[in-house]
Length: 610
Figure: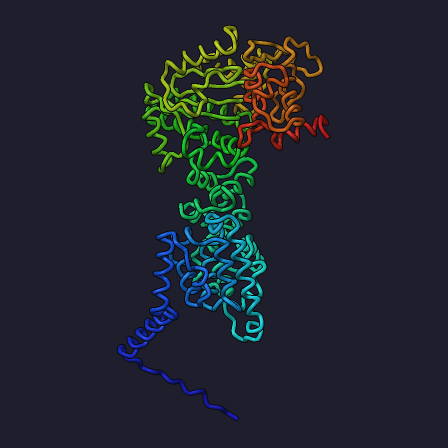
């Protein structure tokens, strides 16, 4: 049998009719808001406010037996932060419940539920344990309504909470909610809708959910990959929101990204970290350092500083390249590739531990012009060298001070002066870099402490660097520091450098030499006897090993405590830690030194601990 298609009706609503519907909606919302708020409600509200204002609570106990008082009190808890601070506590909460028999009315219960989701963990800032107490009150009130809820065919907030309260209202409710969203491959907004939490998605509970949601994304995106969640996390309202204990959401985000990255975080992740927390290579007394970096711990700080060393190298080389082009000087352009290969080779050999970039005013402008954006990295300003760029590079067994133009390449066998690596230093001059730093080096390590000041002659400067290091027992993979054809020419002209069997080690006690072969010590200084090669190829000295083993046995300890226990000068312990052990021990939040994961690993690899 052939059926006709259903008839279609179209109603042409007139604008006046639609306006009427809008007015009805507004009136309905107004009635809903004012329900239960008659004259008596307003009188009780004023009475409660007077009690708080005058700090006179006589008659409050009797007042709580009235239904209207329960509505007024819970509404004031919702509406007034000041009222919450003065009159919201566990004692009054339980007194309210005990006097409202057999159970709270529907309006006060909804008010308490709204209060819970709006304030959540902020409740504990009013009174410790208040969140947990309010959770139990809500759950007990839902249980008191169990019969009517179970018989209801209508799905609303109460029916949902009756079933889901054990996890949804718990302290870890936001985390569990986000886990379910992830497992079910849903959106957070859909989950709030499904759980009948409409209107409750703007409070603290929802903020914590979003924080967990964002952090869960960070835990799963590929390392180095940009994600739009970065933009959300950079908003102060999100990044500075409380998360767990004293930590903020931003701290948790930084920890996730830093801990997930082994070596290079990539531009997107590094930019996000710098935009959120700034450069960690600033004075520890700086407010930004105390706010964002100190809570992360020394190990994470050192890890980020090592990433930024590559950024300093990149910016320094960019400055060199740009000035060669701008000035048109053929010698600078000709020397640039060799200097670039040398510095990048040090990084590829994993010798670069920390750096400090220094820029004159013109060099700074050149770098900013190249980047086309704000210069995020922390750097030292060169006061009387406007067109120059200089970089300090700590390579463990030796340290370099390299500069553009005619600036010599200075080589030291230990960190020469805090003037070039201290994060509290903001300005330097040519005299300081070339004279004061050298004087500090000699005063600290002895007048005979070896150093070199190499002029960048195109055909010989690399050889002078390699020969100086070889004379002092330091071996380098020179092929990794030269181009292929350059390496062949070097071998033909100079041959391989002959590395001294005695390695020069300098400390606060002065200079000492030992045989570079661990099997044949011939030591001249017990503290500096080499024991084994570290992961980057440099030697771990006897004193360094003693420090690692002591920290394993004792646990976290101050520099002074380490020196006292090992019967060593505190300066020598400090020199050894900062020169040899930056990968293997870190400071905790009380500035005590302890073994890092790498330190425990190296002791186990050498079978020095179980």
